[in-house]
Image (cartoon, rainbow, N blue to C red; front, side):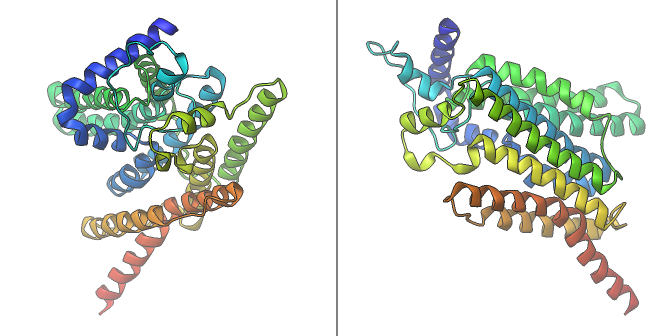
Length: 339
């Protein structure tokens, strides 16, 4: 792996040197590939266009990110930003690379979570758009356009992760291929109109499954905090280390989101029937609400308090999009019709 890692570092250096003027674009792309973007940005947009596909976005994000966490704990992938220093291979000829605010993630690096979740979630959205175009136009050319954009976006996300030194190229490729397979499989089993008990059991299973794996690995002497220590040691700016990039943050985020998805369907099965104009208002209000919920600062100490509040935050998000905001708009428009 030493040769693979070394070549990956030189590729990152070449990418930074050749495209540094596009730094803001790379950072934007890596932000759009963040698993949180699936909950905060793509979910409300897709949900108000098609409810089943919107639910699929949350479902696929949860399962693919949870599996990514499990794979990272098992595979022990390095990250370029700490491996350059730890390897001691570049003492005489250090690479001319720099870090960015999005670089210093604390979990293991293989496979890439951004690539894996993006590949899975975007497959759900792209296949829905392609099916719609095919049913309306019967044009193979138009149907192929979403898939072409899908490939281009995956390439852009992968290169952005290499550019900021968050991943090696082989980690990006592994994440992309795994995410694609998950997207194809999970898109066939979307839990719309499932009972609340299913989501409670899923939430509990994801949480306990991860805890059992974590405890089992530690029982056999595996230190699963190794990546956090390396990230803190080699990150060029200490304030770039964020609690929401830790492995347990992704676990609590996924458990909260899947429980919130179940609660939203329990409170209002089938959702609110709204015409296109009220849906547009719902999208604007939901996006605004999710933005402020996500921006709300959470105490980072003690860590357990942070994880509990983080769980509650993502439990609320599906309910905001599927119940609270549509219910408010439905009530508002119903009153206007009566008057």
